[in-house]
Image (cartoon, rainbow, N blue to C red; front, side, top):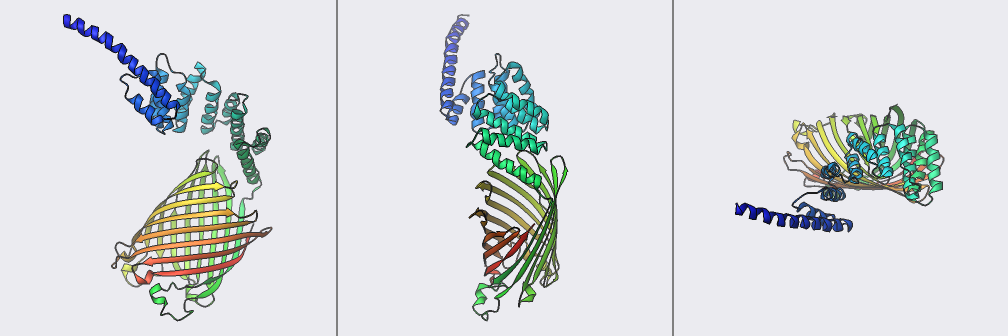
Length: 488
């Protein structure tokens, strides 16, 4: 009995000390959080012997800052459900659920926060964003108006969201008026710049034609039209593979609305190349692409189906059918990400003798890209990586490949643009008898000059260097082209 009393006495002395230590640790964690040392704060909080609503809240805040939104939701929920609750955690909980694209749960906590009068303006702003996701635009407008504080730094964002809602409703006139008001009311701010760009897009979209036509003709010079291998080029008669010719192109596009946030695009393209002497290398390719497009606030999804046919010396060469779903994510007005997965079925009509050279194939590919827009959206830089596998019927052409590329569009002036592309491809023909491995580098640069009205001038240079352990596929090539293009 005396032992029990002694144990209770010691416990009564130790427990307040432990609670005091935990409280002191929580305060140290809060200091680290405010100093933006989130990892250090999180480490202190995870070592507490006893959880409290305050420690749950700050644990959630640290997880939010480090991008661990899923765990942050759990800690914010614990903090809000505590007795008494940490009411401020409701705002962060709604934000995290919105970020995780869980609008229904977020709206439940919005209702709780409104009842408890937790940061009404901030909650109203998040509520507006959630209602936009639910396509409840009229309710979203009410929420955004409730989010006004009278402070320019917050109200400019509210006005911008209201203008975007008008645009989503198809009320381009009201959207344009709101965007112009932002430019006038908040000059020199990021919101004003974005509003000006967005207004321009809306205005152009309203006046845009549903159809577009592009037609061009170019003269080109090719110093290795027949792709003579490097090892053999020294023994080839001078000028044997050099040739010039003309290239003609035609592209027609038609855009239409499919209702709601869906749109459709139809595109037909034709490309024809004629050599003046080496007619056996003349090519003609044309294709038809049908694309369904879905747009929302930050994601654009396209579902293109393409069928294309090509000829060599005007005899059937290949037929391809492909499907390449693509998702484009808008991180900000300047930063985009893109992910593509694709399948192509290719039928070849001209193969080298022997079943091992049959190039009929199922082709699988996946690609990831990052796009940076600059100079008010007139300039573009695209970094891309692609992994592909060509499962050919003949083992000599079956290969696994990697492709790394960079594309750019640089405005040199209001009427002159530089377009460039750099690409490296590595292919392993793992089933070929000679163990063929290719590395191909391609670079091109084009200067595009707007001459007048619908007329453009192009000057292009491209270089190809194919490195292979099989001499037949080891070559280099330079092509210079110049010509004109009409755009309607």
